[in-house]
Image (cartoon, rainbow, N blue to C red; front, side):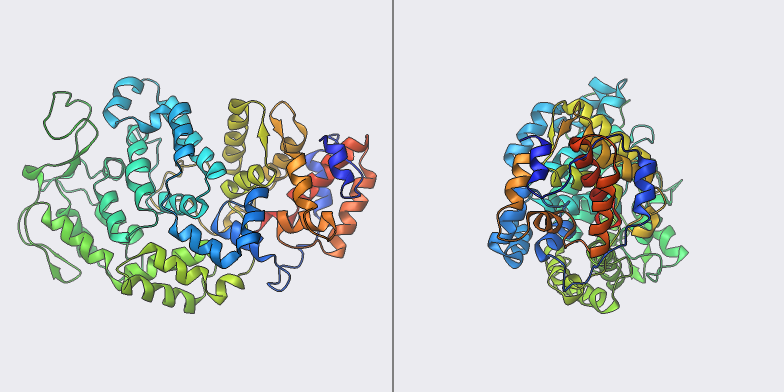
Length: 497
């Protein structure tokens, strides 16, 4: 189906790309933010945008069919495995299944290939996986346990961190995830713990472990606790590339505890005396932090901010923290508390992060690429322009999960839907599928599509702006169609979830 015929379904004039981002920006200034009341919000659209990276036509119909409660439970129960998708990743991006030693050996002088594989696999999984909640949590934990891949050898180590640390534990027990991160060569290298010894302890990992990964900045620890935690993790190291001789137990780039580098002797963290020798010191710190009330609150507050509001409701944070403590840090249990709360269903609009926007557009348009490489480069460029390239935040605190941070760079947000709807060299939306979706009910097809894209009907003011704009766009009907849809997808209404 050609896009001109597609939009005849909705009784719209059709669009073109004499449209520029400057023109679009002028029109958007007239578009009201619209009605975000929970009373008018499409519950399926709300769930798919909060728990995942937005709807696809098939997923939207499926979630409507089984109901939002069943969909939430289904996503919580998902194991995270998507065999068909993983076969695609293995075939197209074999780096993602290589050992760190093999990556060092084959790509030491081609780090750009590893960067492309990491970012490419992240985009592919977010777009295609059926296990959307799991992928959102991978995104969340990758940011929580942030590792900047442009720091020297970090990119070679991050492949295993993504595959063996974050993904297997994204919906498991927090304690298991914390320990996996503590023994992750990528984390130990990034935070300079690999060279930390009893004689010359490095406090970077100990500090970020307490401040960012567990207790939070107001979690009740002292500077002395940081120093003692740093001593507890001395000797937690990796096998560096220069140690190329064969080893019986580990390979290059894997975790290695160096007993002779550990600071033995008494240590106290948060008032608790540690065993005093060997790996048991660090293990004791992990156990202590994973079950600490400040950790429960810090993690719960971040999760509520991610799924509910930039200003997390205190009552829900407390409820989630209580679930965290009662369930021994069961991430699924904490998420269930959040996702079934009144606060979740009455959540205010939250401005989309650029990654959410890019992935959501591709999923929502059921986009069919003509050239995968060109599409990938285009999406990477858009993320770069919007300042949200995966794994590229230099500081350990990760990208801000506050919509207000992302509101200043709007031009690329306007350009992206224009590009996707006009540049046929990249690909095009699946117009047949979108038209079929819009006509499944008995109501107005255009209104059905708005519920799919923005979770509600357009306000009268928004509808008037779209109609007036389409009438004023120069060019043929095809030109008017693209401009009309681009306006909706670049409007304030679509910028929020």
